[in-house]
Image (cartoon, rainbow, N blue to C red; front, side, top):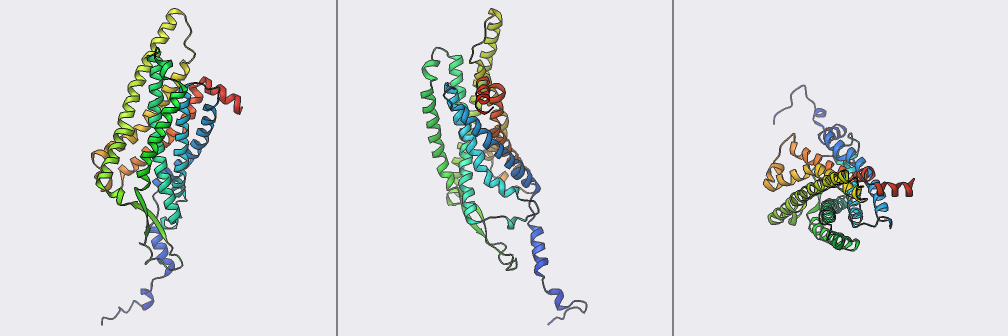
Length: 345
């Protein structure tokens, strides 16, 4: 048997529990980018969005707002409110002080299961927001560019029906997402940490359904085409037509010295709202197309994980868009502003 060198004792080979824990803690230091982008900033925006969308919904559902467009906007505020609210639990996990190591976060089975459910709901709510923007853009395009059939189709009753159908489609869209992930116990530290520091830690991973190649291909295709590419292109085309119609009305109004239509402000408010959506959802659309082209570029990515960071920024932009529609309503919505002042001021 080999002997130990004379300058090494048995005590030198004993691993100190405190030193081991400190070594493990340093190896599980969390990424500052995730902490600030997915945690602090996202949490602040979500809290702001929850409050602002609740205020907007309370105003848009008043009887003094008798337009089909306001029905769609109320549905939009409800979906944005749901998205912001359901993102908060995940943001809280990232927003824990950066000094807290990853294995010290409250990754319990119940919390992870809750994150899977809220994640599916928030993803669906974001899709609903895009579809509702398409709905009220079409509604306004018919009213402005097809004025003879506008009163027939652009009614409050029809708007409620369309909004209800969109929400039903959203529920169908959400059901598979609830089973895309499953909770799995992380045992990587159970044999390393001392007993007084060891605890059960859970994470979520792709389930059997989520790992199915047919499901992944179908989901990525539907997400890219049905949630982003087709809706955003539709909004962009109709917005251009609406903008040209407004310019034409302004020229004719100036030419004949006639006042602009009283509901012109509603169209301008919608143009501003959809323009914000196009700008802040474009990064998410880019990510969805990249997933459609090659998912391996995300799965096999190596440090410094630029694509994943871009994905996080895209999600932050989408959350910011959901939280700030209230600002567009206040700035460009004369009727909305007057009702807000009457109720809350």
